[in-house]
Image (cartoon, rainbow, N blue to C red; front, side, top):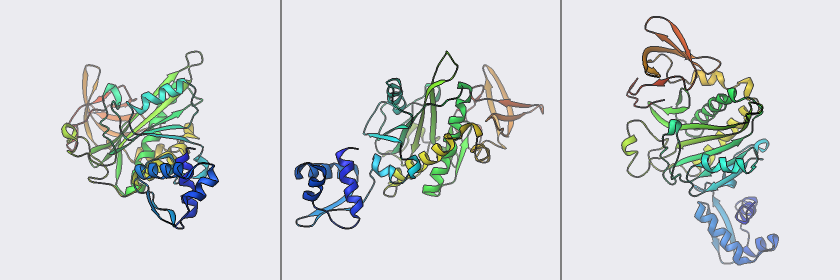
Length: 333
């Protein structure tokens, strides 16, 4: 726990009662000036703290702070062993967390950044990640199952995000097979799971689950992505929304992850399917097909009825859904 986190803990414990910098300094064994610097850092992070001569410090609100402490306060105790790291700017949370995984970081390490300069999407695409506009988060996992089951991580995460957004904001969400969350007919979240395989036993050495949620639109909007992307809020979100959203998504996902192979999330994943009942055009290699999506099966395969009446089942990665397939969507899976 950082010194700022310790100071924040004192302020939270005191509620609406003030506590002097001298008292905090005494409890922590530091100088009053050190406490003052920690309080200023908390203010920079978004906490609303008032201070006055002879009346000490009072935490008025968590404001729009996105810190480990502001997130953990919304997470049930059973999941508070998560090691949450928040940075201002990284290249990609997945890229950085993979390096930490190789260095031996523990399962449950969570990296969140205010901005990504090289955010990653599926198939080598970039993910637009402007400062302070989204929730850009990666989770380090060390599952004990085979690489074949790694798709369950992505499907569980999609449900966790969809439920989290709805619970925090009230927005109706749906999942576009296999890894995107939508509000209306536009993408609000992308999910990318990257894994390292242990070739000796065929299992996963580790997996890094990346989640990028557009919380609010950046100034100037989404530019060339305007036809395909949206944000939960068009302007500034309510204070603390990102911290609550991070906590809710993490809580749902970790509850699923503990019993991942039992697939407790699959029914919701199926019910939230954006594509069910939609006529699509898709590619298998160089071959193009047309069909109607009937749903998603218990193995997260897309069920499609071809124009001939034949029914096909497709795993993620086997097919690419073409642009403009329905409702004005202009996005490739």
